Length: 628
Image (cartoon, rainbow, N blue to C red; front, side, top):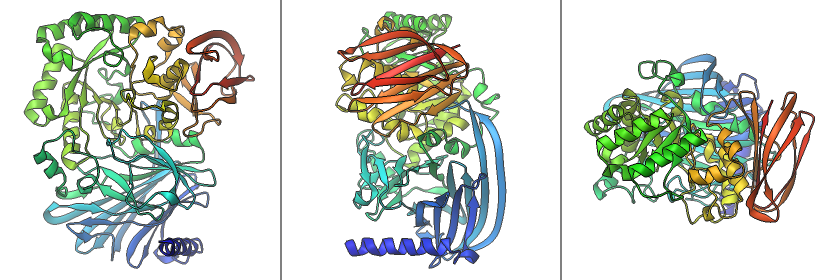
């Protein structure tokens, strides 16, 4: 094993040296980011396509084989390039995320390739914060079966944060050196890693449509190998939610008619955590909204992001109409925009649902209904449910229990997205797969769970978990963590840490786990009321460290928030307020060092010249709202 590892390392170093010396210049295709800092190199070795990625001459992805097989034949070996076309993107578009305006600025390249009788295409885009590539394959065969074996070789000594596929996308991350990740270990994207030089990167996919989802598997040689969902015989998916017949079908190779367009294989790259979190690569690799479905894109009138109350984790009475109205009243008192009903609504009549929807609408609150995905697999079932929601005045649907990325399930997602949009229904995907940027194309999809959230009662080290996922899972898109709970489920975190999570673990549908009555009684209720679901600007501040500390400054309009979630262990940190412009009055909430269940609220004045000195207790937090 040691001999093999040394052999691979020597080969990788040798190839890297050859590329650096331009030995492969005649056969190497180079695409650079607009600012010139990120370089994607494509070349052949023994007639096999390889790629590598650099940031300012530092290697991010070591030379790695790019391999796609169709119907058992490789289309990335023995290739001949027939046509090459370069292009440039430079545009802005509105988005719900770390900021309100995203930038699609990249240099692109499309290559027409012939290999083993297939006509294929390879498209590469290089941004200032990452790279993406995808394949297209056309053939006279009516059925195409893909298999991918592309490898992402990480530099030795890189630190990686990842979880396996047990519980699908609801795992707990571990931190390891890539050299110690054993052969066969599963890695659920996004896989975030830090190079020993301090640069960060994360591997995931974008624009997953009509194709199996991608997981990663370690080859035990610092490489992460793409495995498609239909080709994961030892992984977790399928066994809990699907019949034996469905399970068998999902384990069969995916069959695609006429033409394959793979999702984009993505590496987000940042010189620091701020650059990583603010990357627009994933959404930029997705098409804009269809104007027939969304005439004004995310500004279409019925697209309404906001905050939600939720009667599930924190009591609040039975599943009656009267209790649901009470939750609507509490949402209105908090200024929240939505009220999510779990499955108890199925015991109601249509008249009761309409009564609640009408009552809530008068108070500015939309009603959402939980629904199992297995009941929406046919066009007739979807049309029946979404048309009923529309007729009754329902705002959104929380669709649960997907738990697989087999192509058959991905196709169900696609159908739900389209059919819900036709009836102006917003969507919350629960029990879901990682998001892949489709929130840009379908702005009615406000959030995806795909995270071990507040529902996980057995998670004991919530402090480490909640300071890890902002820089791992959340890079893929919004996560329905169901933030902020003050009872025993908060485990080793404080109430102020929990309040700060509403700022850091944001989503366009920001669901609160706490009973709204307890929120209204919290000393920091005025701060909580003012936390928005969408943001204009985000800055991840320098004290942040994955799994240890998350320090965010976020702006909505002229108002700034600073939110801090501390991991395990007490810490003293300083936060410069230089991002502020002028003088501000601040309302802040901090922990009581003598009572970890209490919240201290203070009012102070600050300017851009000031520095916050914070003494953070283990699992503690801090939040401040800065207003002109």
